Length: 187
Image (cartoon, rainbow, N blue to C red; front, side, top):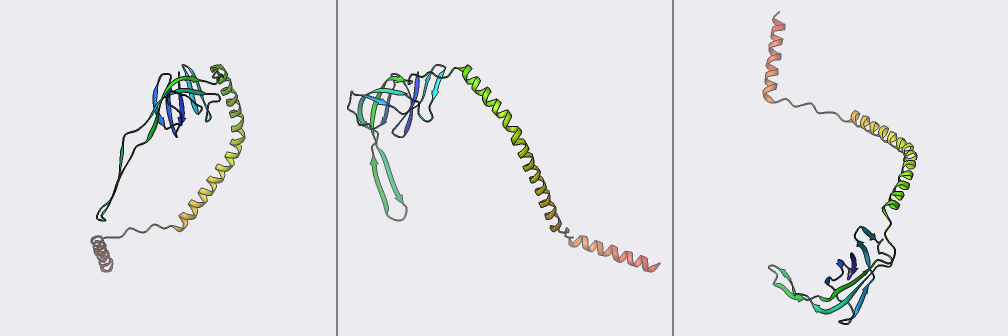
């Protein structure tokens, strides 16, 4: 059996007997702590997912102790400005040992009940598309007609530029014309 809990703005996957470090909690060493923010509980095939929390879900843990994490160096530096700042930070934590996970009493719905719910949803889904299809046909027809109108309007105004002739092709064309004129004039 395992659970997903939220504490100190973070989420943790825990099982009975796990030891974990969380953000500092206000509790004495050796005391029991109940964590109420349970997001999910899984026991074999039974899985309960909260929205956002599982109703009645609880994780009990024993406080092992408090401490401070490793030092993190923070360095601020701007080149060519003679600006350098260095300081450190050590985050406080509480070490917990998980002693129990409670699901809140309610069992997860069985698969047959879930299938019945899906069948009901499918029945509603079949009825809804018929109504939506009629409305959807009108919308698509309007889109198609407006799309063709836009295309025809833009096609009338837009002209393709004639390809430019290169100098060599122009010279060849001019020679051919003058030759043709000479031939026509000679006859």
